[in-house]
Length: 536
Image (cartoon, rainbow, N blue to C red; front, side, top):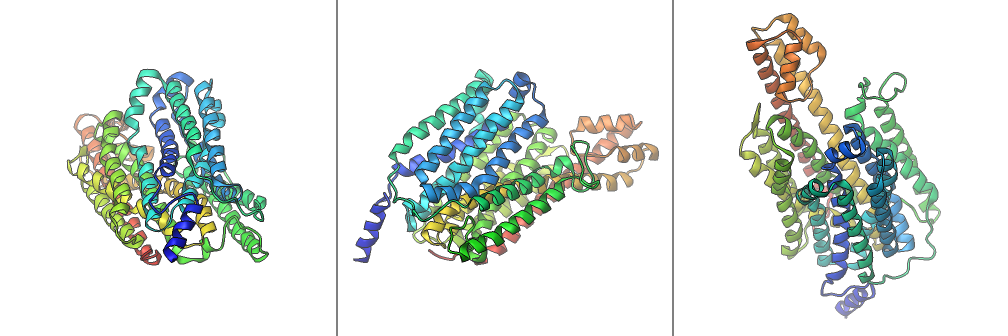
């Protein structure tokens, strides 16, 4: 009887006990769209420079605009989905993405491209991602839910694979055709939403928390802005690219502090809303429950690693090892394919869903892969060990990702499980931003400190030349830049060669140290898995 009731409940939610694939395909296609869009922008730099006169800073701003809008509005998207229905919010998000891509295609300047197109696409993502993560617990339960979340995690891994076909399309037809294809893709997904089953009507008593949405969006925007601009604006001492200062220091820390204060105020406000029986944008279950906090950490950590890996390895491969953009893209297959396969297959192979064990196995592989990746680095290149370590990291991220979302959604009530999509999406964005900012800043600091120490111990070079080099400042760069730095300080021939070798050694040591720190961070996250639900 209990089994029949369970099956009946499943049918009422638009699914069956036999695991419906068609709704999941629609959900996966939506997730692939958001992942692919960002990947396309990442390889379109040269095209944008030529077509719109963009600078690298302009492209970074286009990325930042998307991330800020998407990240700051995702919690709001999660609540709106619960109030108005997930099919409707998914369609709204897809429509905004189509409109944004259309603006990108027709953009005549980088300002239109960024603040018109990328802004709208980011706003669309703030509805799409919560809808994707909210539809899963609305349509599936138990082992089927774990499997569905695994497929969604696999869809996120597609971003590591799309640079190759998009690179070919960009080279052949330009960025307008490429983003036009993405717009048509989103249109196809929008049409396919008609295959999503009808869900029970939202609770008419629930209302949108406007004040909470404002506090969440403002706080997250400030927090993400501060984190994302650490490497370009500076921590305390303003860097040359810093647009303004706050009491003489870079605005990054003030923005992070202000954003954190606003979010703290959000927590207090939401507790009051719940105590009065009102719908909360940020339910207390997501703050007060250790299992949920640990699950959200597990959601953020893989994206932290992705951001860190991108900022640490891509410059090293291209500036030190001499990899072309295509070679770098091909290398991403060694990470993307294992990530994709592990995310899809691990949940299906499990007879019993054990989120804690699965996530721990994933973390273990990531730690092993990152450590071996560090050992693969050499002053002027990389060893074949890199290829093995890249695959290990990809497999570990795929395994951890396959159960991270499920670890959150399965320990809260059904309504909160659906609403968790926005909060999980925010955790993803914060993780990615922190990984990029923290590890990028660490790399630059480590290069500077390591170079100063090794130059001080260098013999055979005029002290005044060494002083001039240290005074100029040493950053992460290729050998040609280091040679130019040595020549500019008055070193020639053997002296210049000695300086280049010293700086190359410091560069390698800094990258290795940063990778080991990343492994240490994942190890700390491993300890944090103690509160993740053991078995479902």
